Length: 506
Image 1 (tube, rainbow, N blue to C red):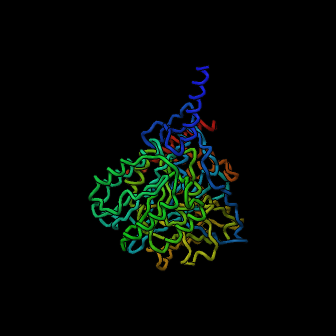
Image 2: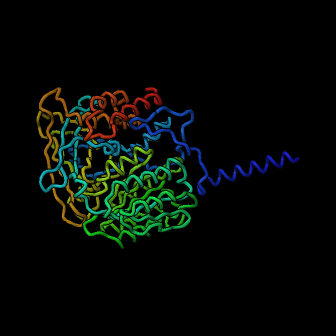
């Protein structure tokens, strides 16, 4: 009888611990993550892959082919996010293929820096485009549109006013979440200037201002506060976001980089928690010049759709952090991207009679109405200093097209500062003048990324796209040079494609 009672007590304790693992920080099933799969990391799959069954993504309905005779204009907001690619890497490295709705092709493209020409003169943005053969559909063409934001030297970067908004709820416990976050923030401080300012607001069962706006010259004090953070309790994200905006507004720097950097798994369950209410709050600060960047962590209860929506409506970007290298990429190597040089950036393509039909690959949740292109009051995406943006259209030439004929007129609008009038860039793009035309290396890299995403999604538009096709397109441009790819991300992509091939058994 005593043994039965002991067994009952032990079982009850175990069940209680499991039920509390989220809210109180007990280790969950993915407490010890697999490696990231980035350069110099082992991408071998574990015997048991961490589950992602509780992760939430908005449904993606892929853009269809559209007849030019019915709708010659295609309009969309740019998307500078890269979260989808990093989440995919986490999944593949852990031995599973991500859900189709987790794969946003535009974020695969925009995760990487492309070798595009920089803006000239007073321009804050440069536009380039080219057309080549579509690798997965014979007779079809690909139109590649490339944008690059003006590069700024570290000394020329505006003074920062950063609010670190940190989720310290139980679901953030673990080496791949709160511990990874603390390491990344401390590294970022080492690369900020003494005159920059940061504040720290945390939220779990309650909201706490751990540090009011302070100069980075007190970096050691700031690091002690960061390293003291622990994860436990429920998640009062909405109230914390309100406090963060108030802190940013109180310490606003005219002409500076006023930005909230939110670090979370997106699971708000206390206070203002509905997506609609949060979006309304974020949008109310758009005209104040305060940007919102979101860093996502973890799997198992990851709320991707909420975080992407918040960043889209908050003049910001959305990144998924799966490893230490990704923290270095975002907070150190690409820290200039936190400063937006091109705001409310949108693109409109007018296809000519030489194109029968077209399909925008990705950007499904960034489509805009034709009339919104010229409306400077309409919100769109931001491009950071030195950041590149890529978009692809698959096009079907008309029966009457001729080599060298103009296929599309591309226009891009952007603002140097929020609230100002927009600038207009334009370019004409022709169909190659002869069969067998060799497109640029960056064209092939973009096509390879698209083929990879289409294959992982098992897209109805993938044609003959395959993982081997993606690898063949990417391998020749997987080592473009230190200035474009200092972390070896392209070479790591080739490794990931190989691992995906093992999982899919292509």
